[in-house]
Amino acid sequence: QLYALLGQPHFQTKDLPNFRQRQRPPQDDLARSVMKSKVDKFRGRCYVVSGDVLSLIHMFAVDKGLHDKRMVFDATASGLNDALWSPHFGLPTVRCTFRSLTPGCWQCDMDVGEMFLCFWLHVVLRRY
Image 1 (cartoon, rainbow, N blue to C red):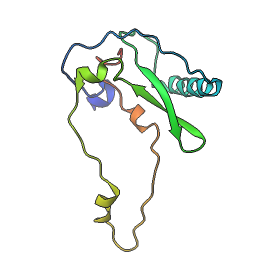
Image 2: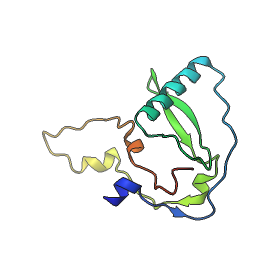
Image 3: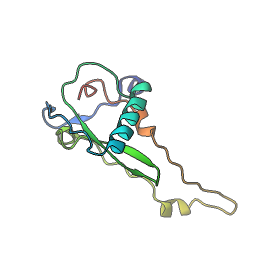
Image 4: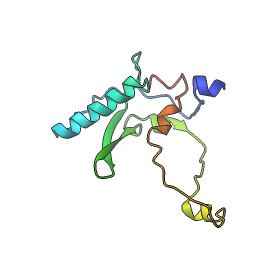
């Protein structure tokens, strides 16, 4: 339960970055308004909150289906990914799930969208 409150700690392999390079806004007005609406939604749900910031993370939008965009947070450019390590964890593929199917079973394809935004970063990392 403590990890749910404070976030799961990460393994730090080097000093955390102090990345201050400002992100250039998208040149396209439509892309800019989509990114703003996504960020406003994140802030409204308290996935991103005001506070001290020690390092910035750039973000960009990628297509999600035909009519939507998904925000990608790029912790590589800031150096955060390079300063952290996490153990590999495998996710099942469709082929793996076939073994558990029995006659009459149903499967579905679910877009869990913002699920990963519900996992808090550890308190030490939130300012990065």
